[in-house]
Length: 140
Image (tube, rainbow, N blue to C red; front, top):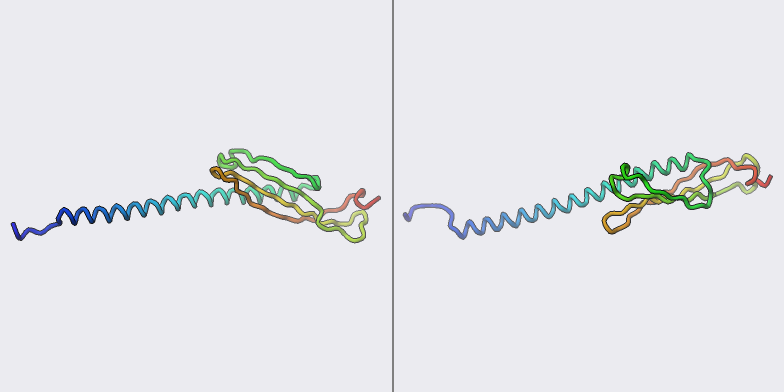
């Protein structure tokens, strides 16, 4: 029986230990990748909702100035996460000589927020639009 070849018990234990360490490392890496993918999915959803809300607010000329507007997104749009928005429209610039039918430049600041676990995250956008001034703004 001296000519038999094979693995000893010690070699099998060492090989199994090395394989176990490698599998644990791979699973830890996979877990981190999954967490990052979920975080990126939440961020991407927030950016898409921010673009839609920004376009809606820029198109609505009846949005009050110098007033904080805020709201929540419906859960079916957010994937079940709590998400909301906060916006403010201010006048960024007007002509030095203000006359009726002249144009002003409005600035819109928008923040989209969401909760991720115990943390509150947010994305901020800023946009501008040209607006025709009203008679009361021109002093008439």
